[in-house]
Image 1: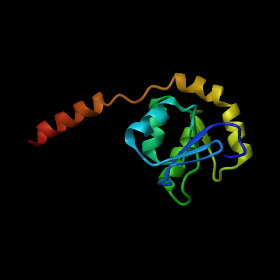
Image 2: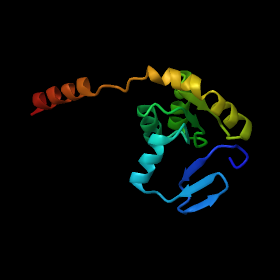
Image 3: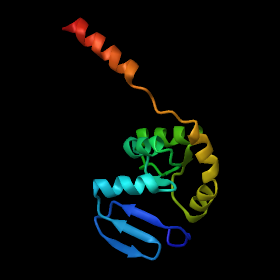
Length: 133
């Protein structure tokens, strides 16, 4: 990431430090969500939570799932298949640069993304609970 001329905010190393274009931050929920909201894109593993938050905010995603974690691999696979970002087994300078160049393509696809409406599910749960009560 140091070799790419972009600013990167990095969480997960439990330190506050700046190295050229890399800004390491200790986790703080408010700061994290502000950074996520203002990010051009997200580089992450294949975990559901951050992917779903990024999709909600319509942020393109570069996903590198944890090896051997089927759920993460599946999440990243569908993320790429739906055109919301890319799935990579390893992160490297070339693929990250290519991803960043394609951000307008992913943003256009994400404009059409509508998060799932949970109201039907909630209604069904209420009916089931009433039947069982």
